[in-house]
Amino acid sequence: MQRTATCLCGQASVTVTGEPVLVTACNCTCCQRRSGSVFSVASRWTVEQIASRRGELSVFERVGSSGGRVRTSFCPTCGSTIVTHLAAMPEVVGIPVGAFADPRFPPPQVVVWCDEQAEWMAFPEGMVRLSDQSQPVTRA
Image (cartoon, rainbow, N blue to C red; front, side):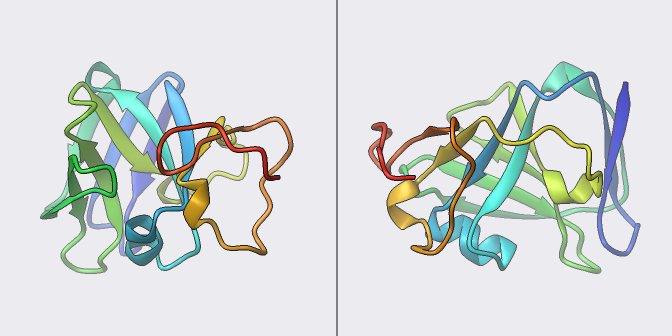
């Protein structure tokens, strides 16, 4: 199976093969600000699963909430995030699930930074939930 994630204006895209190795929802304040939402959802792919990339991307690098480097690649025209790289996971590429615009995309298996989650937000039962110290939390 191949899937293509595209920015809002269509100038940049990345095509992946197979299924994501992981899908995560992140509640950290950095992801909230980057996404413009109260959480972000990212699919994770091995570098071998990247079939092609198209278009120009700008890069923003920052220190993540856990202290590691995070590199975000985004379209310089429309600002859509297309790819993220975490220093802690050098062989894995993150792609925002929304960039695929596929309502059948697999749901997140893990929710992280739950200590920073909006109080009114509720994720489905059964998902692994981690606090900002990567410790399981019990709140639904």
